[in-house]
Length: 212
Image (cartoon, rainbow, N blue to C red):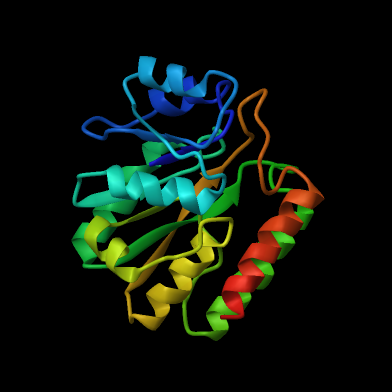
């Protein structure tokens, strides 16, 4: 599941790394750079979500999926889809309810300080709640029906945090694996960590979720 907003420069790299037997669902969130057409030409199933927001795109993809196990990943090229089988195998082999990827930067400057700081604060607050994670993970594997039943309502940047909070409240077994986090594809820009403003918006949305 790949939420997508103007990722034309990254999609060939991202989708060509898709492991065998995995099928990509690209949820376009209002791109104007031809991203949906590129995704379709590379064999992805393309869905459209006109409501802007990470959570809105993710939820549309979740509803449109049919597989028992679904995976989520950013579409900007910073994460490698070839790592997904490790998450899925852990989910199936251990009986875990949710497996998430902890980002490990591949070099200096990959993860801007303001985004990394926000992530550290939020993950610390989650650990205080009893959830052993160190990242508000953009890569995750989960059973589709269980996630729908969890009832995530946030449709903005707070979606990943609400997922983790509700998973903890539901007593889910959450496992975390290290995944490489690299430079985004040329011509793409993170909607969250690419600027102080984007990070501030994400922290605002996540703060609202944390306060519920």
